[in-house]
Length: 532
Image 1: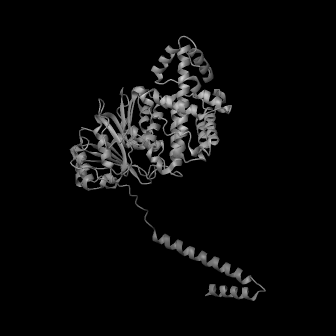
Image 2: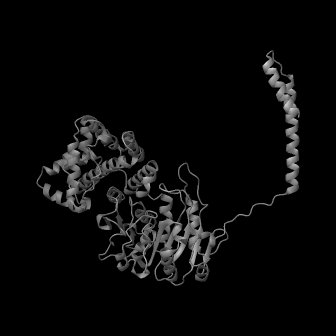
Image 3: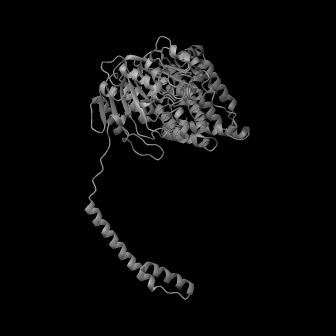
């Protein structure tokens, strides 16, 4: 690896890796290659740093030095003891010839073979259930990498050389995790609509997390759950706002296998120890999870797919998540199925924040019945209208619904944050000032003209349990009255100016002359029309 002073900025190195693949495939495909290979480098470098620390009880000067020390130790009598120690701490072992450092040296001397990297991936996957099938999305023999063995090998080799410039030895978890987050965000921007499958914009993540953690920041052993976790970015936000981040337990489920793998890598790159990450690849609605010892959580954060289809099979009426409501979310719109799943897993004194389309606030039939039941139980605590076009996969305005269990009171705070945004090229964005303004309204929980309204249960009942924000927050700006006399005076002045300009133009036309009779005839006809 290059020395620190010669290392490029981490983000720019990783982005240059993306440049190698960008012309060959779209962002939704190349993110798997780039993030997977970056993750293998992280595993390899972390392994060698740990080995050096166990041998010499200090940090190595560089990764090559750590590799040499590891090789030397493996040749001695204490090889097995060292392996056992590293395995118990890292949960995996890497042979010297399969370290990223060796692959990078081979790539620079044109002797790199993809088979070795494939073997390295396989070994990691077999080492612990934590890593099972982690690299399955990386096809090192794909035609997308180029036509023929040589070109494909060259692409992988070039990628390995480029990413080797990243100095992970001197980058802590926060720097590395943030760089990874940045990459995921850039892929989301390039990917467009498909980005909704794996990414919640950072501003929305911040707002959801700040709401859900409010009042729980100092709790040791905080538990956070995201049943539609995508790349895990929303879950990981909790550590930014908690006083004891090392003790947070993260629970997450994701249906898409590639995205699930992305979340697992993201957890490790943010320094989350294996014991604190409980992640699952599965369908959140089809089968309840988690169902073991820990089933309810301090914070539930969700950005589910909007108005997704689900089976809504009659059997779900006996499912504990939905049985209290007597009806199911409609087949064509699973929004309330996701909401009720999250609420079921919320602790009595916890907070849930979920992003949904505005339709959940006012649609009738089964959804209306579920909404009424939630309101009668005092579960809906706040409704926050967000600006339109914040997300990559939809331009529609969305809202955050905040839920609690067993609270006193049934009032609901409505906040209209629809105008709190900065217009961007592709997406609108909420700045930190906008987020702080929303949090101030949320925490004060008072009526503020044109911004917030604290509705009593009676207010909501009078509105037939319709939660459409404009019914409660009137943000209508009255237009200034028009002064008719001033308008007439202005119109008269404009008429005079037009008359004057027309006269000057006519005078110029009369001065024109031409030897061509056709041109002169047309010119005189134009002058005649203007003088009428």
